[in-house]
Image (cartoon, rainbow, N blue to C red; front, side):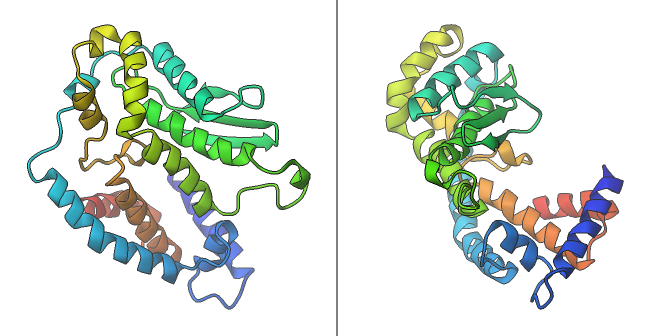
Length: 261
């Protein structure tokens, strides 16, 4: 991967140079996805977020993480996907205008106003990550599917920004998909599909397990609270690479150091 990442990095620098007068080399690249946003603004937001978030994480995990071992057992892929499909249909995802497939890294892709597809990574050894991916990518898709048809074929026929897009995905994944009221409705349906695994697990225990807060190394599987720290680490590493302070060959070592910190 290293030579391709090095090439991408160099091309990103060249792209930024087409927009002279920037304060930070990342500014034109950020502006492309989030008009008006700059590296300095992002950095100040992350600084404020870190000050507030780290003590919250420490407070939540002080007595140890919630029990979630019952989620680490065989859960058939097809049944997981089937349950998630039922849920996102109820959210409003229109399968006549899209589809879902498996992949190594979850994403939403739009080919046209009536062709908005989602993908997710599924593991048969744990329930949770695939479902979070489904609800997250469904949020992206619902945003695209909700675009006014009169805008089709114009520059307005797309999400306002990457930040707003992510807010919609995270809304459905977390504010809805991790909510106790949500699971009061859907947990009996999940128990019916996986009676052997979850038949004796109470709603409260499942709810606490699905919302377990714990430091981890994989962003897409992170809990709601620690997720933002993954983004923060990646932002700082990318800034250093763009500035020439960090070579791609040294990225693994820097990544480990940042996560340890």
